[in-house]
Image (cartoon, rainbow, N blue to C red; front, side):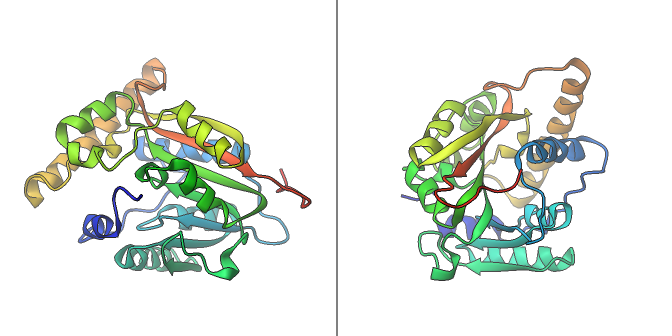
Length: 270
């Protein structure tokens, strides 16, 4: 069961501006955040080959990752989302960045025949934790993945301090998440038939995962999110100065990288 649903996400994306692009070479807390992910991807993801590798993001509404993987990695990108508004925003983002890519308006549980085992790398960012059955969601994601391909899973870490904050400012938002720690997310990938390559906590106290929900007026929400951005920037500076640990208590995210069995086909190039 999807604990959120299409209507929730369409309302969530309603009226939101397109986000700024990912700039790996930038400075400051926002760039540091994406540089953490960039270093992780560099350690595990295959570089573009003579055949452009096919990349799919499931749950791609307002995705900054699609232009990033096209521009930084040379991947052939596509996105899938069941929110029509979210798909339109992703198309606008790709157009703004001058990136070619396909956006599919569809439910991930109803793949088209040509999509089956068609992608080399699949990303889901904030998707699988909204399902009661995490394993079933991961198994469904893997039907799009060719043998030997990689699944990249990002979820918010609500098993630490940020989860406690979320329970105070928006318990209704917390209720549409299944709370998973690192070990549980790793086990779900293994039970889904995937081979684990990496699973760990990432990004010190990244307050962007916290959402007040529908409480308060528009201006109150705007200032709330501005406050979260300021808090994230402050804590990131503190961490860089004093090397504070990123663990279950302090992490903003959990990231998992897993591989589909290659069977009789060769795996992705290292």
